[in-house]
Length: 172
Image (cartoon, rainbow, N blue to C red; front, side):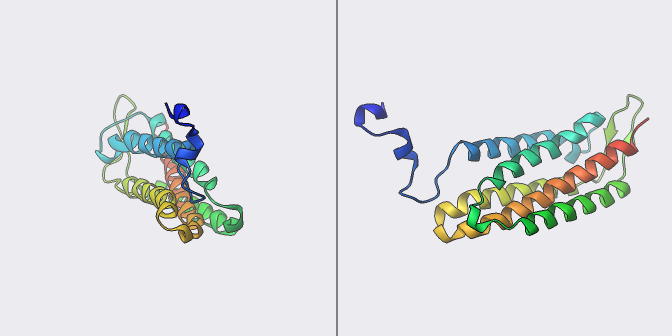
């Protein structure tokens, strides 16, 4: 229908040189929404299979990987992202050793009192929303995107370190 008006779809989505939403933003939202959904049984302290412990970190990493593409080349700070990834992994591994894990007779794992996964996922979600919406509102906010990406990376590696350690600890 827009073709009849002589307007291309790219012209409709572009906001005159300002940061515009694209398909990658929607993929990042889908990945973090799936991460939130898959994490619900853990937050509700319901039993789940051991392999499902590893799904939220993978979805969080997909979101972070997409967010790395949001960072403009002139604003990239690789030392910050590497430091955040390493810190998140160390903190996640430490937490994985101290988290209580109950295993039932069917081999299902329950993590009572593991609200840190909820907190990490909410932090990733908040960072993703900030990295997506801030440049749309304020053009100078594009310099904040590397910091939001690093915070999301810290949360994703925290979730992965914690999940891998709990997975290995609950082997039968």
